[in-house]
Image (cartoon, rainbow, N blue to C red; front, side):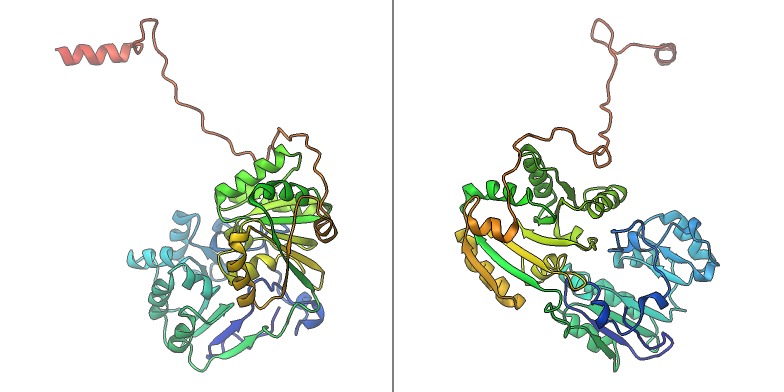
Amino acid sequence: YWKLDPIGDERGKLLIAEVGKGAPPEDEQPTDPSTMPPATFPEDGAHPTDADQMVAEPDSLDAPDEAKALDLARWQAKAINALKRGVGILVATPGRLIDLIEREEVNLNSLLVTVLDEADQMADMGFLPAVKRILNYSKKDSQRMLFSATLDRGVDGLVKQYLHDPKEHSIKEIETSKGKMDHYVFVVDQGDKATITNQIASRDGKTIFFVRTQRGADKLTANLAKAGVFAEALHGGKSQSVRTKTLARFKEKSSAVLVATDVAARGIHVDGIDLVVHYDAPADHKDYLHRSGRTARAGELGRVVTLVTRSEQRSMNGITLRAGVEAWVMAITPMHQKLTSITGAKEPSGVPIVERSPVTQEKAPKPFRVERSARGKRPTNSRNRRRKFSNSR
């Protein structure tokens, strides 16, 4: 939504936005979004988070070859064939692109513009060496654009080395005063954590619980179902179609519970989420801010709750301090008065939900079975008998 100079401008672009900010409120937007070319996404509620979500399948793009956006993360055989014809826009992950460059399937000699998205995440995941290799393939006088939430962990070095006299666009000034977010740290006993979680999940409204691992997401979803709370898990272990449909259902319902991992959080752009719960404490302040940014979007109100035990309280205090937020810290027990007033917690029905949604249920592979004869031996057919006969001869 931020108006930039024409892409033909040779100056580099440095765009900085705090993690979890999302789109700024309408009155903060320098340009009218309705005047901009529309972006096409798989379904409402599922915005692009990585290369395999940003473009359509090559054959489905109704546009000239030079205007097509090509995805190297999926449909690789079709992508390579399209590359031979020439494309105007290439969307790729660093490792896959370098692999194709080394195989001489991709030539970047005519590259005019390079866009590096989420540079800070690239640094966290150890991809900066691969990113630098790709930038070295581009011409020095070509335009380079870098998007990042912060300039630490090597990103500042990337800016100094590859962006010459960059023009900076920053939305750091846009704080959460208009989209107000209240932060709470609930100190709970380990034995009460599951009960308190069930009570929070039974509330009215859209709620997201964040966990660290895919297994943790599935486990929490199953535990909520046993307590009578329907919830769906969202993580990278599920197929793209399942994730898209899960998000669509979450967006449609006025009251819904979603259990997500940090990686999956980048695909959640849904309005109306008024409560985010850190079931597992985040790894650092950046994860905290990004998770929390799923609520209080576009000027709405939101609350953020973190569940910690006494042993985790000190480290959590450090995270909120580095995140620059003031959190209310309080001891909470099941159905505590503050628990109900802050989150709207209620007692769950206690009636287990047995059946899972048929859309989210992945088909299990059929087990391989070998038919055996009455004597416990493999049955022989005429072909096997002929093979044995020929071998004996």
